[in-house]
Amino acid sequence: MELTSPTDFAKDIVQSVQDYSLLAGRSLANLFRHPRYFADMMQQADLIGVGSLPIVVLTGTFTGAVLALNSAHTLERFGSLSLIGQLVSVGMVTELGPVLTGLMVAGRNSSGMASELGSMVVTEQIDAMRALGTDPTKKLITPRVISTIFMLFFLTIISDFVGLIGGGIVSSLMFGMDWHQYWSSAWQTLKFQDVFTGLLKPVLFGFIIATVGCYYGISARGGTQGVGRATTQAVVASSVLIIAVDFFATRLILSIFGYR
Image 1 (tube, one colour):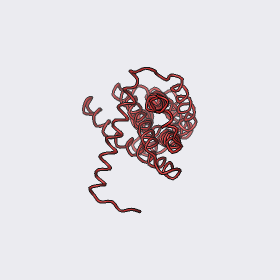
Image 2: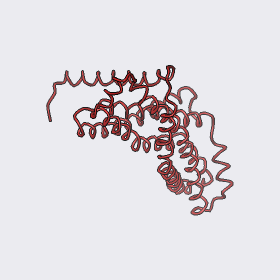
Image 3: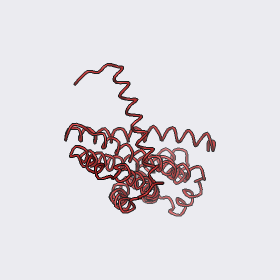
Image 4: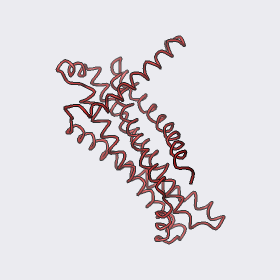
């Protein structure tokens, strides 16, 4: 491993942040410029959304079931087992649903974007697009960003719903809770703040997943080894950013709406 001076390391970090910011800004600005590649957006939406649906459904279902199973034993000590629906609904909608869905989609699609674009870079397909007068950012990155934001929004809703179903199944079969009572308490406890939080986060996470994956892919250097490094870095960086942005987004929303 080659050693670098702290100055060069700091310069590389600043340069990376600058390049990422420019790429992210251009990916959104391209929406207001022609041409708009709607066919590519639909294709990416199918790959990202439909392709991620099975893993999102499984993750959401078992997360809701585990949340109900763990919380039921604690609530049972205080004779508050009827509150299990409220706990599962708030936990899934505001936190676990968006974050786990974002992490699953990041692991599946951020790596795919980085490897696909990285392969195009090392085989000089990106340079060929520029030579033909096509903007690679508009053609390759913007459709992926828009499709990821759009599909992650609905994948999170699906994850929340199946998580509530998983929690209801565990509550009904293992703890004898009435099914209608569970759903009644689960829906009634949700406030506008909870729903707003749960629907804002996937928009932010989708933007992070797509832009980070595309950035590392378009920045890949060094042949196939560089593509492999870019894929790994894309998954790690997007996952860490999702968790970090989740904290700051939650803190901001709580400061606006106040605590429950």
